Amino acid sequence: MQLTSGLDVLKLDLTNQQIDALNTILIEHMKWNQVFNLSAHRTEHDVVVYQILDSLSVNSFISSGTLLDIGTGPGFPGLPLAVIFPETQMTLLDSNDKKLAFARHIKSLCHLDNVKIVHQRIEDIRDDQRFDQIISRAFTHLNGMIDCSLRLLSPKGELLAMKGAQAESEVADAQMTHSNCHISVHQLPHVVEEQRKVAIVKQGLE
Image (cartoon, rainbow, N blue to C red):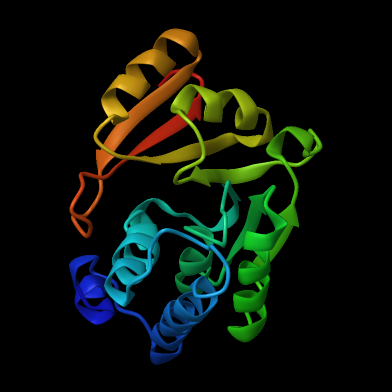
């Protein structure tokens, strides 16, 4: 799948500048992956589909305000989302500084002023910080995400856990453990071969 056709599937109507920025992420990922082990995605097709489009598949659930991307690695899903949501303040968090170097490179290259990059473990973030949304694509199981990040969520905020086919079983476990949370599961657009869903966690029952 090409980037433009994938954006059509996601029903995203982007500016030329935004498309250029996504192509920059693609080109630079291909370059960096030859030297650094950014990800297992080595072909242009895989980077487009599994890094860029997969990151953007959650776009309809992103709101303005502040968003924390935990376990971002080299910057996914945070970087592509930052490109298409310039008004949302994105904090990209990871404990691997070598991978975060790529995120810093893209932030500078694409002039992503809405991106802040933090080299830290989520357990070490101060309790006085609050985010409107906290997202994770491949960080940990849902219970683990709730355990370590719920304290950083604003009162009306939400956790967005991007998951595969195992979403329902993880949600069932999390609902038993965190009965004070409301958890819903939503199907994501079909841009990768595997099934993708997002589990949305809110504090308090609805």
